[in-house]
Image (cartoon, rainbow, N blue to C red; front, side, top):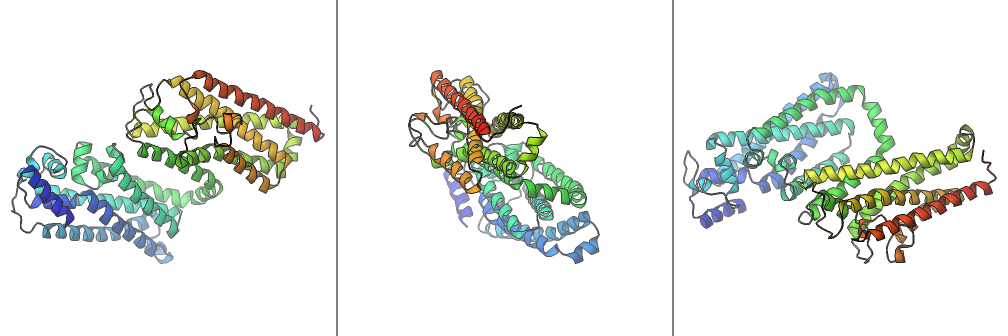
Length: 479
């Protein structure tokens, strides 16, 4: 009813006549009715159906994963069609009291405004109203059938209801956010549900159908093969690497969140890089979101190194020392390996930030809009060189502490202390090698950036020296 009232008010503001097609399309193609009502309902129907069919009687009767997928696909089709037809009937009920015509109204044929956007996109498609409604129904069927196959795919590899619920929740939130904040039509969920929006943003009413059809075809062809032949190896890999997967997802989520929160501030890729990894700054301005994302990104990397090194020192260390002939040889190999890994990690962060920024239609122009007087070379130098030196310092600190205090509880305290002393309140004058690669420390003065490099390099030399002294105190020979 509120959608009907909004359409009527829009026609009054434009002084244009409505007919039944404006009401039907306005409700049937509305982002609010599709995303907030129809999407959650049919997604829940999908997972309930999948859970019902997930039993040995269906598996033994259908003999293959592909047949099981298609059987579920067919049953879900009836639910989708029933829901869409009911939705369409309700839309037509709200047309009572409006004139009926076989053609588009003057409201949909008038100049494009925010008030008549849905009707204008529908009229500009070049289709008759009846054909447009039928295609809108078809697009919704394609979309929900495709979502059903994606949920089937997830359930085939992770058959737990809680993960399905989380996936549905994340997808619905993404659908809402993509409609409000994203500009790339291929990443907006609504453009695959609403034919007026799909036709207006993708340039053709057929594009959405083609993309959904291709995705459904790929899922039906590939997923059963993966499930039948490689499920055990995929499951084992996921089980062994789930902390790294969660870590990667959190980084992606943090960068995307920055792009959404500051979409009006960020104009270039380099603005996104600066604001995503802002961390802390000299003026002690504090943002909990940026601070936490900095901690997750950089101290998360240090934490994985800590886990790795403790595993060596409490288990495989003496075997590896014998293998490498000397502790110095082992130490140099570990440091070189993680020094290279740290630099690759920073390159990957830069690459991911660049790709996501381009997806959000940000410019690659070599300029900064959020910080005057700072050049692109300075930003890249601080992110890559100071970032690498900061990661190396963090790894050396946890290595020294793990060598002296190998108990696990002490190492947790070490990471906690590093997180705490990253704050400018404790790191007064930035004399501690913690958090110094924060983008907040970048100023128009190159000397400040180089001072940070010199400080981090000095600390790194001291830490390596301490490590070598510890080796000697343990009476470990150097050959």
